[in-house]
Image 1 (cartoon, rainbow, N blue to C red):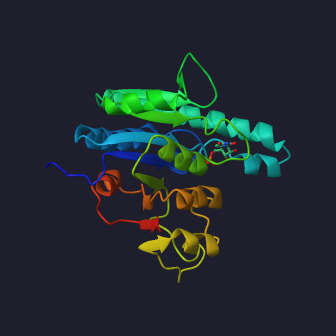
Image 2: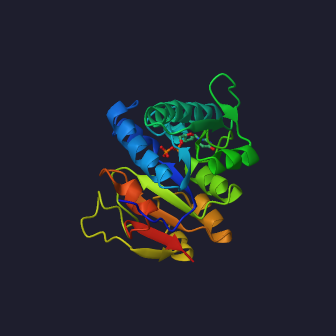
Amino acid sequence: DELPSPYKRVLLKLSGEVFGGGKVGVDPDIVSALARQIARVVGDGVQVAVVVGGGNFFRGAELQQRGMDRDRADYMGMLGTVMNCLALQDFLEKEGTQTRVQTAITMGQIAEPYVPRRAERHLDKGRVVIFGAGSGMPYFSTDTVAAQRALEISAEVLLMGKQGVDGVYDADPHKDPSATKFADLSYDEYLARDLKVADATAVSMARDYKLPMIFFSLDHDGSVVQVVAGEKIGTTVHA
Ligand code: UDP
């Protein structure tokens, strides 16, 4: 069953949490299931770049609360994302999908440096490009990097794959049972409500350059295929 996608090129942000299934580290079963979905949409001709989070290993803010310097803690966070990248790369290649990892902190033995024009060439050839090590700069988040990379490689949409939440709600659905999910939301309303599903820097960057963001759940298998096919799942944040 061929699925016609409305997109030619997408940027998929995978939160670090999903890699560990809520635990520290990488759950190979989860990563291989994700890789199968990505391989399928690439097989259907959609170009896919991925930005990988690292919250399953370290979050700079949490380490800072426990006494570490923020910048060094953030570098630990960025290094964590790279382990997720390698796991995803491995399972994608097992699916027969060609991949390249590009990192914002150079580590030549395992990844290319971030070279946007080269990333676009890889995408044109049907390779999945996996961006790791965040922006290479402390005080940023991988959500913001996802928005920046999406813009720089001219992706048409930023697909924000989350664990444990299936869209944007007007309150935290884990704390407030009356929280309701938005199907659509404007950038301005997202920012005015000070919602936390993605950080405000990422959303304001998307707003400034009119990049649509779709927040969706990675908790059930098949959601990546659905969202790339243009099925209306999750929450779309747009102008
Ligand atoms: N990080 C950073 N600069 C970046 C991207 C990430 O310093 O450009 C650090 C930051 O400490 C962050 C951690 O890496 O907490 C993991 O990234 P993030 O929290 O965005 O991952 P996710 O929430 O998507 O799992």
